[in-house]
Length: 296
Image 1 (cartoon, rainbow, N blue to C red):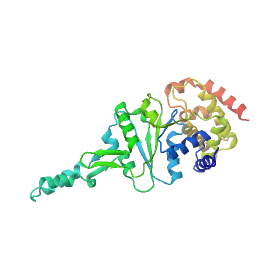
Image 2 (image 1 turned 180 degrees about the vertical axis):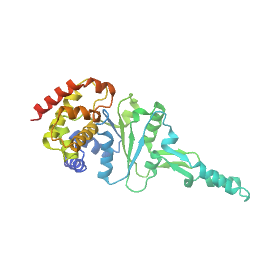
Image 3 (image 1 turned 90 degrees about the vertical axis):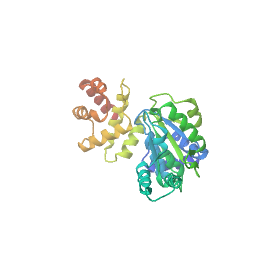
Image 4 (image 1 turned 135 degrees about the vertical axis):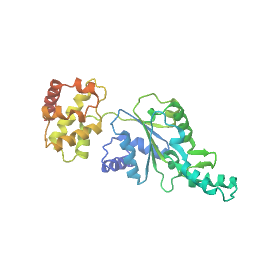
């Protein structure tokens, strides 16, 4: 590894994000090449957290656009403050003001509501980190618009003209792969796929993020999750669920796994009814027994 990658790994670790060389290299290249970084992986593997940590490392703002089905360009980019505009028009009634002057006055930056994408372009000072979260939930039309925006980091507002970013933001897009993204967007970005952590990495994450957990508990939780994800689940638990569950066990004063406590707290890990039914009491007992043996 280069000294820059090693230093970035250390920065990530100081911020509580347990990363490997591939993650640090992708972040380093995205910054160095001024390219958006597309991060894919199952829910809960740390995609969104990566953008938050990068913003803290760079000591800059995080601007987040949460994508969803039906998200339109105006909602993501800008809107006019219609109530204030209407009030200004009403105030001009009876004053004999030139209607064209009133119109010019209400379509200025003072009446513009900047949404995340425009905020990222107009932000003064250090470039912010722009997180476009779960881009796979937006439709193809929005994806096409986003491709154009990421190419030039400029937008045209009919009433104001073209607005360009003085310094482009650092862009991270995340996807849970609920739909396939277009090839054009993929070509525009660098790509990183984050897997569920292996055993040793998961134990490191637990010890780093839940330091009050005993070493024995952390290792047994890691072994339990490793075996659990090997089952055919609708929604395999991610790192976020691992940490929630570990904190729950710590709050229940557990220093190791107990089958009965695991059954009572399984809702911290499994968020689908089918998965809870599939991992029944007998399965829990077997998984706990295996985790205890492997964790020694």
